[in-house]
Length: 115
Image 1: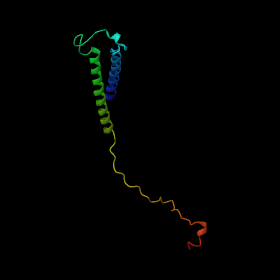
Image 2: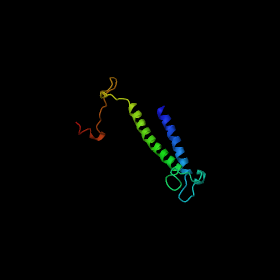
Image 3: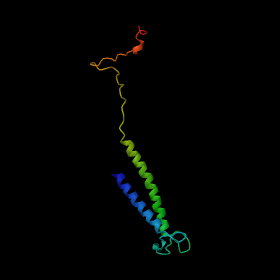
Image 4: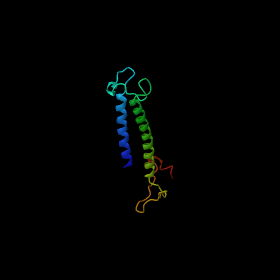
């Protein structure tokens, strides 16, 4: 249940990450940056990162940490559910009581050399 919840949160984080990457302004101003609302900067108009860049970095970090944590959690769950095996006794090679042992036959042409 916990793995399913964390996987769902990771998928939602990935969708938001894609959305914020597409919203950002490109260097050539060819992206969907016009939908971003113009000059929204975090540390003034001349320098610093755009608010969408900051959110993208945060979502990317959460995505990487979530993926790493989910993989550790999934591997721990997988190893916990592996049944502990016991050594198995060797299989007896004896024939059942109602079955006779196979008789080896010499080739038809070698009957004189077998005597």
